[in-house]
Structure formats: structure tokens, C-alpha cells
Image 1 (cartoon, rainbow, N blue to C red):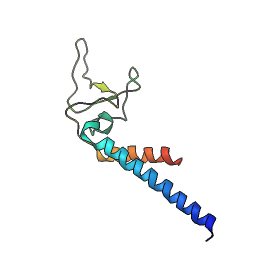
Image 2: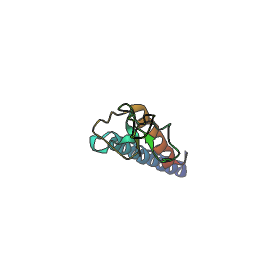
Image 3: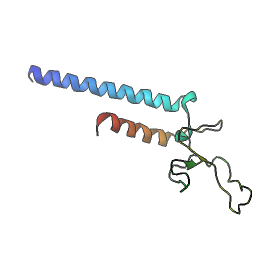
Image 4: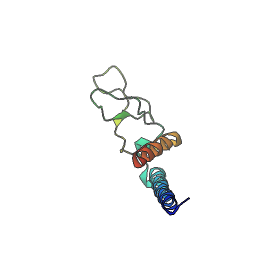
Length: 108
């Protein structure tokens, strides 16, 4: 292996370490008590949305409530960066967010 190949390999290794450090910092941010938000809660149903709230999803931590003049109960719709005192971390969702973050930061 020549000097060029060694330098290229060293630079690639440095880039990899920098991305890994960013991912660790991002995971810490997601799981830190101060950084917890609906997006990382096991009760936030990101697969559901409502036509009136396309950028929000229901929180299913409590049973649905029936608003006045409605016959059907509804869950509150919250955005991914909302939070509450009942947050329960969803490790699978944290892994998904970290994988997404890694793809965005490595171009892959």
C-alpha cells in the first residue's frame, strides 16, 4: 500500500469516527431525560395521522376522550417535539431515528 492509499484509508477512518461520534451524541440527546419528547415515546403512534393534522400523530398514553358534541372518542394529536411527564422511552424508535440520522450524515 502506497502513501496515497494509506492517507485515504486514514482519512476515511477519521470521517467514520466523526460520524460515529455524532450518532452517539444524537442518541444521548434522544435518551437524555431533558431531551425526551413524543417522537421517542412508546405511546406516540407515528403510523397514524389525521387529515386535519397531517404533521401530528395521536398520543395513546391515556384512553380516548369524547369531546362535547361528539359521539366518538379521540386521542390527543401531538407533534413529534411535544412532551409530557408520562414519557416512556421506546428503544426501537430511538434505534430507527439513529439509523435515519446516520443515513443523512453519511450520504447513504
